Image (cartoon, rainbow, N blue to C red; front, side, top):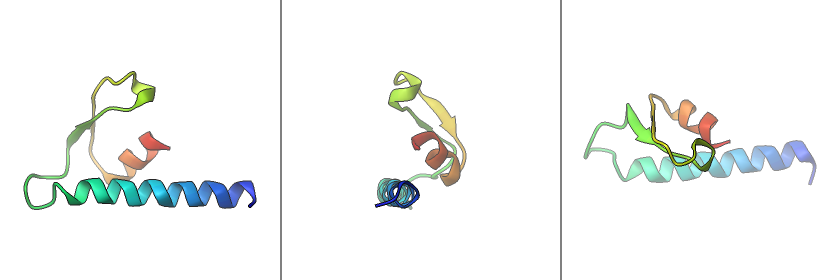
Length: 59
C-alpha cells in the first residue's frame, strides 16, 4: 500500500473512533466545547470546539 493510501486509511480510522466516542455523549451533554488530552499534550487537558479540531489534534 502506498504512503498516501495508508495516511487516508489511518485518518478514516481516527474519524470512526472519534465519532464512536462522541456518539456516547450525544443527547446526554453538549458535544462542544469539551476537554481532551493526548499523549502529545503530555496528558494535559485542553479545550476543543469542533470535530475537525479533535481530528487535527489526533493525527
